[in-house]
Amino acid sequence: MTTQLLEMRGIGKSFPGVHALRDVELRLNAGEVVALLGENGAGKSTLINILSGVFNHYDGDITLAGNPVVLHTPTDSQRLGISTIHQELNLVASMSIADNIWLGREQGKGGFVNRRKSLDSAKAVLARVGLDLEPTTPVSQLRVAEQQLVEVAKALSIDAKILIMDEPTSALADAEVQKLFDVIRSLT
View 1 (cartoon, helix red, strand yellow):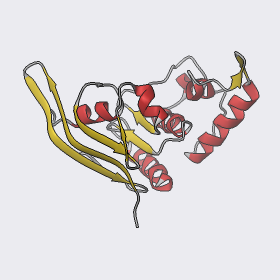
View 2 (tube, helix red, strand yellow):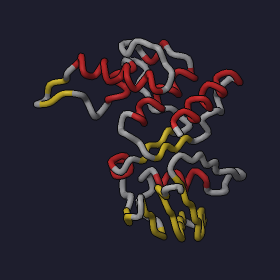
View 3 (cartoon, helix red, strand yellow):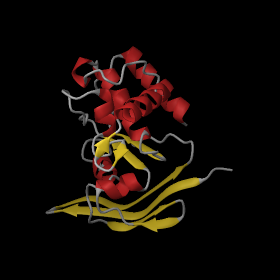
């Protein structure tokens, strides 16, 4: 028996002069991979941005694990276990892998960062996505495919139950796409 994680009912979003979404329904179950397909302008990114908390005014209802939620900000979405990796990667090139993973959620307390904990926990989450890299490595030294996997590791670090990837393969070579798909399979 599958467990329903997410249900979106009657979702609508309008911009001045444009109805981007009308009465959209989406259901996601645990352990399932879902692809949104459609032409440019079909509303895929708009739906992703609603679920990610980027667009905070929308019509319809969203439930997570059967509980009604309202997503006003990306922080709301992350707090509820929804993590989004946008097509344009959101990493700071001059910072280390570990610092990117924990940016805004630094490991430690009392205003002090526990560097050892940051590095150890980054190493653990990198292992989950099959990256054997030193967490101290600057992101600028990584290939695009490795940066994509750092983004996945960052998403997993918030204990994401729903991972949204916006066109994750667009800048990857065939072998890198296969590696990403292998990681996605292992996460399900």
